[in-house]
Amino acid sequence: MNLFLKKFKKAVFYLEKIKFKFADKFHLNDYAIKRLEKQYKHLLAKAKSEDEKKKINSYYKYRLMLLKKESNRGENINYHFNKDNPLETLYWLNINKNIHTKGLKHNLIKLLIEILLLVLSMNDLFGTFESIVNVLSILGLVKESISMCINGSCIMLQNYNIDRVEKYIAGPYQKRKEKIERKAVEYVPLTEVTSKVIDKSDGLPTPSEMLASLTTDEQKELFLKLVRQELKYRKRKEETSKVKILSK
Image 1: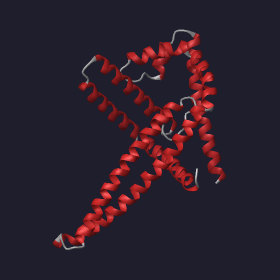
Image 2 (image 1 turned 45 degrees about the horizontal axis):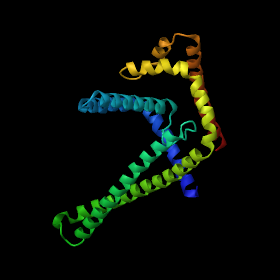
Image 3 (image 1 turned 180 degrees about the horizontal axis):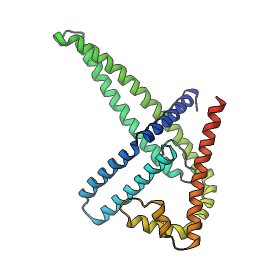
Image 4 (image 1 turned 90 degrees about the vertical axis):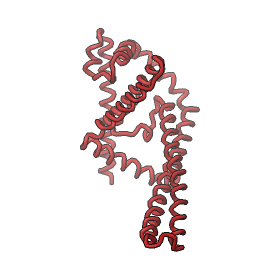
């Protein structure tokens, strides 16, 4: 990774931290969940078959889970590498790259329009509005140039990350896969129950509802093990963040 991308990556993570602090303070995640629900209801109303409704319902629950996960961890899913599920990371990296690629195309179109307006305004084609059009065109050029630089930098960063994840999938992940599969087998008694609870609920069940659905000591122990792992992850992230602040 070159020096520019390293600095840009640091800036992205810094803005991510501010974003989640702001979102937490003003409860913006609640707004995001409401917007997702609105989209879900709209898609559900347009569904033509039960199979299509099931797919929409599954995708809605998946997106809802990601929203809650991002909010609880203070992390954007496409900024952080999930070594246990690199294919998911790759999926979101490509989506993010496509968003910035479309943004870059729009920037170029708008930039050409602003240049055209600026040239026309210099040739007395707007009469008394000439100076206003002139100023607005220059402001538009500045805005689109900055936006184009950001989109271009994001695409370069995503290309670097996509390449890194693809190399990991082709190499180290193949060895790690066995460990992940063994772990998945260990949690089968829990997932058999929780998947049914999730399927039956309209949204996502609460941890209390999940715990209430568990009937054996083994299921409860596995559930608590997952909770402890998540808390351990958040604590480690918090401690790492403090160390970085102290080392500055």
